Image 1 (spheres, rainbow, N blue to C red):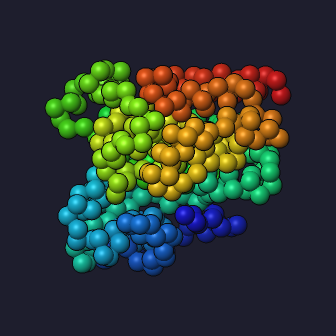
Image 2 (cartoon, rainbow, N blue to C red):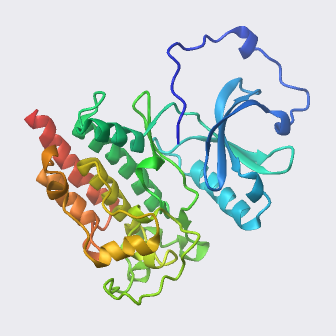
Image 3 (tube, rainbow, N blue to C red):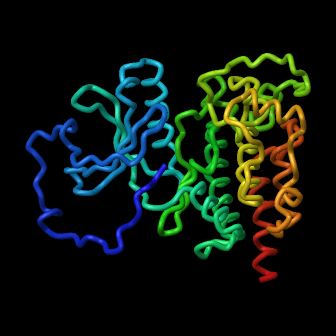
Length: 337
């Protein structure tokens, strides 16, 4: 996704904009104008446009035309909009409005953040074969990941599992802000389990039975559509996307950490079968062995390996614990510099 960049000079604010009167009968269906497409995903279109009521440019998201009337996609879209709005955290993007356009199709508006995705930052590092790109460096990249962890932990304690944490869904703004985006595949529990959200983080009812990943005959309960991106999905999410808990996000964070450290994907493959096959064949190389020229700290390798253990009972059991481990390393790195 190619996010818009901040202009070199900022437009001044004039009274001709601040003092415009609202219509006597405001109509939200004609509130937005001057649309410019930012990105087209598999299900949604993201645009920038001008909010004529508040006289500012915002981010406008809607379903692709061929999906706009699909009841299942409408339900998922509404859930995404409301989850994004309800998770009010410094590392989640502010949501402004949910509504229908003149055709009756759903849309929601958000803050327009200028910047680059973590994918773009990693790609720049790959091109130069170093973490030292544009003033970032490994400590700064780890700090970005820590902000992702803070957003994820906040979501978890509010009963939400993201399910699609990957570099493309992390936006780093031009002012240093970090946003975890795209809650369209997030999992939330119904009211019957809401009262136990905090206990569920460690409770048996949300733990998977041990799965023998070496069993080549194991059934994939859902092949499509996927609630996530296979190279960043945990083993249990690949096998049964409906039977997961918050620790699938911990695994995904570990795969992002692996990419930050090695500048390579942990597993190749874009579909469930190919990723599972590489897991079965133990097609995995620890970070320091995978990229020996990058001087990867052993402490960060240990954290990465702990996050991405196949058995989720052996991973970090909360993102809060993971944050503490990453903070310990950043403090040591600062002290040594």
